[in-house]
Image (cartoon, rainbow, N blue to C red; front, side):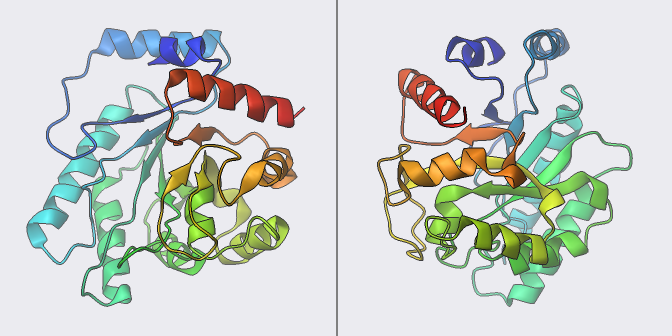
Length: 260
């Protein structure tokens, strides 16, 4: 993965800890993990942003689904220690017919059950677009989850540009205001990573359909402001746009050029 990232000009990357649709993870190869640590050090990589499977739903109304979320996250965080000091990003889940406060309590319980004193991995809640009964659609919901975690120094937020836009935060016309609201609700120091994605839908659509950089409702100028904003400087930026490796290489070059 590290060699592929280098081949397209990247100095960070995301990866799924297992099949994104769930299931068992592959056995760890400690020598390969160690080689990646060396490659990252030798090439000036920033933190990696691992991604939990999409099927992980810690606030499901099904107890077995919640049990899977706990066991999956616990195992993933143990495995992440082979790549110390990086990030583990997850979708807070869908509450289905449950009360939001009950769902928040379930998410907190899963985090507190999976996290351990002394872990080097920081767990990131992803900002969500708010489709259906998704949790994490507002900065307030994220704050309420973070407030209940037993290891506050090892939790943070990954802000997805498509998701916050689709969730109703107008980063196209008021990026400063959105970040100020984030700071009031969550604290800007909790913002640890970015998913840079354009959107196929207008602000507030609650759809979550990603588009390539500059070809959606956010537009190039929004990303120019994002990559040059002082509150966002130095954060690892992950592309989840509908692309191939050649397309990602072009987007990385484009974003780097805008940041000059």
